Structure formats: structure tokens, C-alpha cells
Length: 315
Image (cartoon, rainbow, N blue to C red; front, side, top):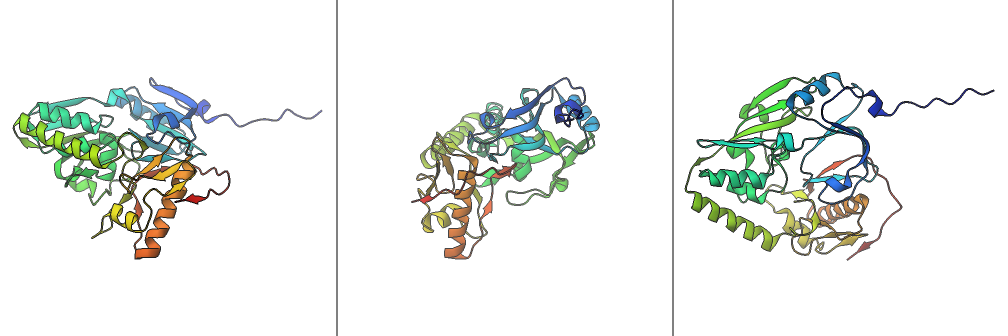
């Protein structure tokens, strides 16, 4: 008689006790702006900072950790994400103001941070109304818009490292560069202090309205998109390179280069993550062929590829 086949336990069975939520094989498409992508092997939503620290201290060390926030600038591949995906939710979305400083949780929406700053008469954070996503993601990539970036207003941040220890970072620890930081990759940002200057609330709100109007007029804000696709190469504008390479409206499967703004990819309704990534790579190829310039992905691509065969390019 053959012995019964033994199966390795699912990763979730090896998770430590938590006060937050743990789910196995959780579909990630519903969380992302693109509305595409496969499942997380395990999704963890911590109850608070201590819960996150305890989890990081006691987690299986062989399990990969991936952190997601507002997912406005993330493409989850169709094969899903192995290991544990950590998603910071409402417990990390607090926003407080004092004098000319704003203390915001990593899950706080950038637009809400800008609004609270305006209400408190704190100038300098208006540009955040034009950044989709949350504070944690903005810190990771030194997000910016309309001539300003996080580095300009950054005072300090709190993060949890891979061993579950809480760390406080100052500007010199971040290594800010254009759409990039040199902060250690294992850090999970949980909050930040952003510093503006005293201003007139009405004038701040007017500037924010101008930014929002400009954004709505020039970007596909009503579409299933993922924010700016490529970082601007030095001395160039990514959208202009994409446009002049003949990619405006370019389509693969259900993915399209936005006719409104060529540095945005759109899920027109039935795109797969593979459609979107393949389209992005085709755009990069065309720009390289025409200008000899390599576009760098600004969208963060996560997980495993799962293809259903090649898709044709349709101009």
C-alpha cells in the first residue's frame, strides 16, 4: 500500500499570531488602480505599528515580503505575488497638523494630506494634490508633481525594518534623487513628518484647485491607469519621447497608451497585466530605436509573469 502523499503546508499556516488580518491567495486586482494582477500568496493587514513589528520579528524568514499602499503606481503581474504582501490600511492613515508641520501615516492619501495642510494654512504641500496614491509610496519613490517633490518638504519618517525594529530617518538617511531614494529596501514606512511654511488658506486652496484642474484637463484621471509610466530621462520629457516615437494610442490586447497623455497606460476594460507590461516594453523599444534613449519604468512591477501567448500590437 502506497503511503499517502504529503503536501507542504500553505504559507499562511506558518504565519505568527497577529491582531490584524491574514488571508491566503487573496486577489490583488481589486486593490490596484489598473484592476489587473494575480493573487497574493498571503496578504497581511496589520492592526497597528506594534502588530507590524511583532509580525516582522516572528515571520518565516524564508518568506518574501512585498509592501503595497494605494497601488496607484503598481502593476501586479498575472501570476500573482509569492510570499507575504503587506498592505497598510486605515490604522496607518491618520493626519495631524501642528504649526507648519504635517504628520501623516503611510496609508494617508496624498490628496488628503494636501487638503489638511491647506485647512491648517500650511503652504508648500499643494503639489501633493496632484500625486495619486499614499504617503508611503511617495516616500519610497520621492514622488513629485508640478515642480515640487517629497524631498522638498521631508522632515523625518518612521519605518519598521526587516527585523521588526522601529527606525527614525532624517533627510540624510533617505538619499533622495529624482523619483528615487537610497533608503534600505527592507524598510516599511509607517509615517512621516512633512514641513511646509505659514500661508493663507484661501490662496493655498486656490493653488490646489489650479493643479487639480490642470491634471484633469491633461491626464486620464477617470481611466484605469497607474500614474506616470516612465521617469523623465535627464533633459527630456518622457511623454514627448513616447509621442514622437509614434506611440500615442498604441494598443496591445486591452492595454492602450493614453491618447490624452502618452506617459500613461490604460486598461481599456479587459487588459491583462501582461498586456500592459508588454505595451510598456514596446514603447521603450520604440523610443530606444528612434532616439537612443532608454526609458526607465516609474511604475513598480510586482510578481510572476503568466502569459497566454503573444499579443499583437495595434496602432
